[in-house]
Length: 275
Image (cartoon, rainbow, N blue to C red; front, side, top):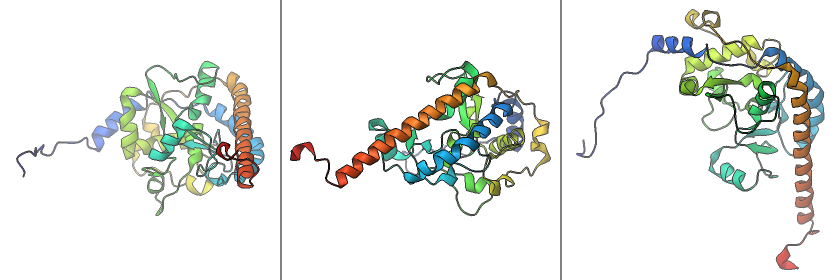
């Protein structure tokens, strides 16, 4: 050992029983969106997905990764930015023809829009429930993706549609955020709760639903006390009108960018320096 190195030794870490006790505390404060609200969302998705699908495909979006039967994605084509280059690009321009499998890259606002409408009756404005933070249940992006392994698959799958799916988010007290993100047992418990709570819709494509299972009676969701689902259906229609406008505005801007890009490539628009 070099003289400047410090030997910290081996410290104890929580065992499964410790995590189980922690889970019994966390579930009492974990807030899910009411399933009645999700049903309304899915009904509207069945109307809007066929309209949005060809428009998304026009921009190279793999629509199956956002939209599936009875799926709950709120804003198909919108995913979380990731990696240094995308984050840097987001700071300068949020719309780009070259975004991989997306029409828009978001920091973390779009998953919160529905929550804001059903809790506060208005568009999200950077403020959520006091003392709580939004948590995603299943991974939805490439970086550190655990979705494939947690579903027991040999290969990784990426479903960016999970980013804005209300069945894939919950609000957790800020003091309890890290355990829900870093512990597989706790994450699986939330998976199982979402699967049960939203049994009438598909939180994942059909071929993956059966892979969310419980292998231990101790972790049966019935053994835990859960907070009641939240949300006021009175404001869902206002949200649906809002998202249609947002999607329409994004499509319009993307088509404008596509037209400008096409004109440049065809020599119809000249650079200022060449005039």
